[in-house]
Image (cartoon, rainbow, N blue to C red; front, side):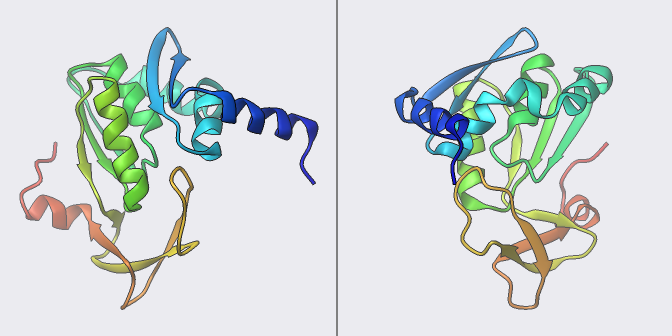
Length: 166
């Protein structure tokens, strides 16, 4: 059963613009919103993970590098890129729909990141997504399998293949 608050949020999503301007710690970050999950992420951007935002504020800088592993639609890598315009941001997201969304969100905000459409793990191979057919904005878990649907690479392999690393 859906609560009254849930109904209000879903109605607000239906009436909201496709691109939302999200105020986050003095910055305005624009997000494309195509479904209720993305609307919820936009709505709770500044409050859902304050410790992550604190960490970026404390350790970020134009001379730093951020690896956003499992970036989803790019909330925290976008925040870092907007807060520190010269910061190098490398983003890893295996889910195709989220990968496309985060690339679009970076363009909406005139920010740059290197976006890799893979999952990171401790070994190279393939993995299965759970759930197997997620929607844009949804989080997934991966399980290693010889016949998986998602490419998995280790950071060591990526660096060995020429990805620059600090």
